[in-house]
Amino acid sequence: MSQIDLLVKNGRIIDPTNGVDTVADIAVNDGIILSIDNNIQFQAKETFDAGGCLVTPGLIDCHVHCYQYSTPLGINPDEHCLSRGVTTIVDGGSAGASTFQGLRRYIADRSKTRVLAFLHIAQHGLAAAGCASGAPGGELDSLNVVTVDDCAKCILENRDMIVGVKVRLSDSIADNGKNEAEAYRQTISVIEIIFTINYFVYRRALLAAKKADVPIMVHHTMSTVKTQVDNDDPTELGCPRDLRPGDLYTHTFHPYRSCIVDPDTLTIYSDVIEAKKRGVLYDVGHGQGSFGWTVAEICARTQFYPDTISTDLHSGNHIGPAYDLPIVMSKFLHLGMPLVDVIRAVTSTPAKAIGWGSRIGCLTPGKEADITVLKLKEGRFPMEDCQSQVRVLDKIFKPVAVWRAGNSHPITEPTPFPNLEAMSQNSREWDNILVKDKARPVVK
Image 1 (spheres, rainbow, N blue to C red):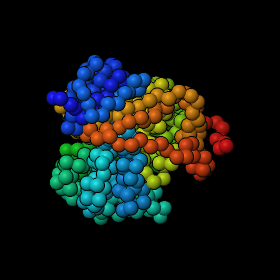
Image 2: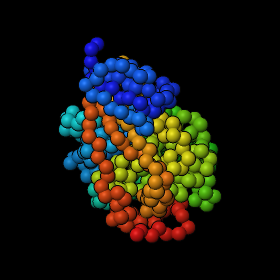
Image 3: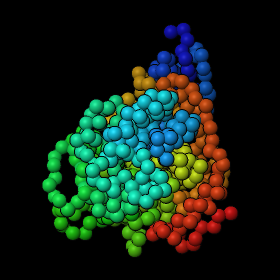
Image 4: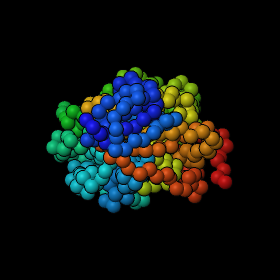
């Protein structure tokens, strides 16, 4: 071979899948990783000097909302994800069985970013419901739209793109909580029929996931489904207690009702800890309201860190407080999560969780060349949570370069950053959260 397409030189390569943490070069040709070694001597059409930087597998954000224009939450994945070093995103339930083909045709097929999806248990997904539109009510107000067979059929017919089932457990979007448990059950298991008649949407989502042999992602905030179940009643559902190994519990560090931290004792509930031991995966899902510094710090004291780091990026938070995936990663580095574990939480773990571990999230020769270069920038960076409580970080991840299947894409930065207007708006939520700092945040 006389000349290759790309040579990334001198970077610190961190690839948790292959146990690699070393300074080396990466050779790429025809969109495929050719080799990783020291001082590679190939002539290349493009050479990138990554000296002083981290070189990682293309970042994976396993919870975003990218059904742009068809849902109020949708953002453009190339503008807000790929340009920040994220080569693969997983849409978090924007589409249901009745609306999925639009997500494929108008978003996934037209994006340079690899777009995968969790399918919402509700047939219409998040077309306009609850926090997605500002209108009262939500997508689970009627169980008529929660159909296990249609959900499972859509998944099985689109396994190249759909990786699991999504359900939102919040009483305000499920007929004041009446339909939550049934949706939860039907999401967990799409194969066996559970005949208990006392619960609603959660049940159906569990059923759908089991029938299609995929994981579920559960949004659990301000819910009638308990975080901690303190009795032996087998008919009472709990979340995360009734999740299976491999299922994802998102919005892990939110400070509202249904928080994983007991607001009285400020300790993590035992059902949460037991679920983690059992193999339930805890996802960040930062969002506009679902990350609180106080909750995250309580968890960090016992090294209860997330398995996957995601943004829940959407139209309401890409200008703050989430901004992008490297910023959310920076928050967990600040909390004491080891650097390699932070990288693992946006590469190998989400890849494995969605069943793509053999294809993405690694820098294995012979695999598609999804590569991200990050710089750890040092300084003093005031960083808000979703209710505008602030911590000062001494370093943040800055994306420097990204290649998707060997093709380079330009890097952008969030503007404005920090966004004081968004901070002022989000600080209004202070009175509604349960686990928080002693002093109300002051936005300057």
